[in-house]
Image 1: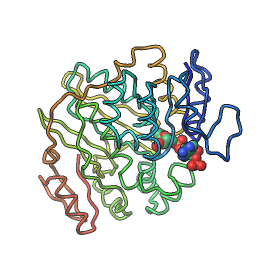
Image 2: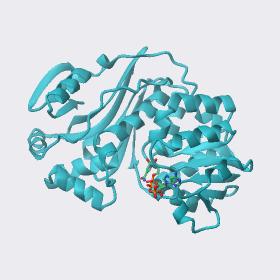
Image 3: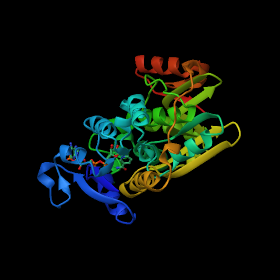
Image 4: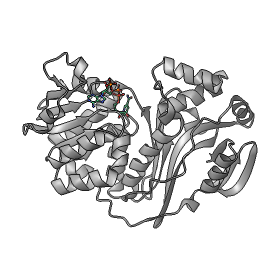
Length: 355
Ligand SMILES: NC(=O)c1ccc[n+]([C@@H]2O[C@H](COP(=O)([O-])OP(=O)(O)OC[C@H]3O[C@@H](n4cnc5c(N)ncnc54)[C@H](OP(=O)(O)O)[C@@H]3O)[C@@H](O)[C@H]2O)c1
């Protein structure tokens, strides 16, 4: 199968290398910036890739929504399979792109978009095909986890932890999407849509880690508690809710012990109970592994098994997320998460939800 890779950065390069090991896969083109066309297979002309009928599969390893979204759409429209690692573009056009893939009878796969190398989408689809999933939650951003872990274990300030995450290449020069919760928002929207088999609401409560300070960390530690940034999605019968929020956890819980830039994602099903997945949520090689596993589904398996019909008619009810909320230095019992977060934002205070 002839393949075109869009983007030759951290992920694109690793995908190119790993694909050399896959029998039956051949990279015909890599879309690269015009000033870096160092190899014969590189081009900066996207039309060449999309208009070549021998290219059957497009790998999207570009950053940001545009032009990824337009390229994914164009690939599907021209009857090509698309494998993407780009959660921003997938989340942006989620229902439209999923419907287009189904209409065209091609695959749109995006395992690498959530949790890097962790095979979470595959498991959600496998378990969810039989079982009713009523919860997806997790630590879905390695950069923010690294920062919180350093603040807690080494007593670093927020700025020191951010600086170190940038030095290690975990955080971008502009870390906004990681620390604001926006990256986690994209991932929990994708994962819960698949888990609940419906296109979930995108306008959800989101709070990042920017307001978390050293003093709060110290206070929580004294109480045997820990803080993590998590995406949470819950379903009860025909209703569901989701949010991205700092979460206060018992220090002995598994999530509280997820260190460095690792991720942990949990799903809960009626039959299976709770399953937890732990691993490298980012990095070129683990992410490329997820991309190539998707390509292998197209090559060797019936990849339509790895798609959802999004057939459930569920209603979004933010009131389902209700419990102990921390606003500044005060804790409130039985408060709606959405209400507590709004209040914290309007008063420019720290917010967290207790799990
Ligand atoms: N890195 C990870 O650990 C990881 C994990 C999971 C998912 N992802 C996702 O995977 C995607 C790629 O991430 P990455 O870390 O590989 O990013 P990256 O290192 O910044 O690579 C992206 C590459 O695409 C190039 N590019 C941008 N626009 C282009 C265009 N129009 N034509 C040709 N080349 C273009 C960039 O070049 P310039 O910089 O010169 O513009 C850069 O070389 C992102 O959507 C990211 O969210 C990454």
